[in-house]
Image 1 (spheres, rainbow, N blue to C red):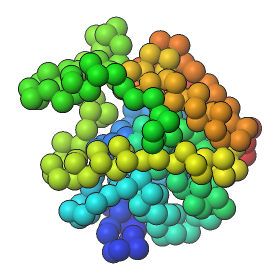
Image 2 (cartoon, helix red, strand yellow):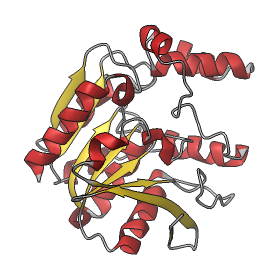
Image 3 (cartoon, rainbow, N blue to C red):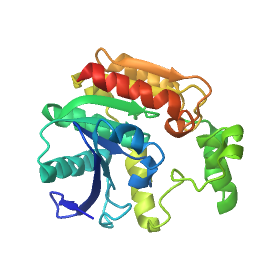
Image 4 (cartoon, rainbow, N blue to C red):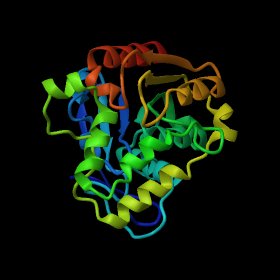
Length: 260
């Protein structure tokens, strides 16, 4: 497993597949690079995909110190430096989309095009999930909380046809303190004021039935980022990229081709 060294010495794990221009893949909160396993082959045919374990997850180091989405973005930059990649396409979903926002804001010369999936601008202007969702996810019964998260990710019909295992329900190897650091980093994200600085061509893509991260946030991002393109997938929940792979994958690839 290759590693890059972050500015503070934290080792950031990543792997590389495929061929073509670079495409960085960023997973959701408290997940590792295997978040992308089911759909990664769709991109490997035309892109060199770089899947990253954010600090605290996967095979990256897990320092017991505060994390932030901006710090995660700096870690991504360290991976690009390690690989000698000057410019790349970036596809971030959920919290990975928050990280991708900072990469495009702080390192505009490194981001050729940007895809923000099922994510949010953060801060007080973002639309929060409803109280029922929050209570279900905070259940003291781990099985009930997992069932609630699974329902937020996929429709019942898809789950019936695809019984798992699922790679989007959290990294089972993460220590509890690292999960807490990821949660705080995601909750404290607020890029609203600087989103208009993003000059990379941007696709915002979201499922219309996403209750984990309400679809209203996709509209906010598309309105806030100059010339952003908005793609909504009817009926899709949070893991739109897996369940609606046949729709989402081609739309992302088409956008990347046009932008490149």
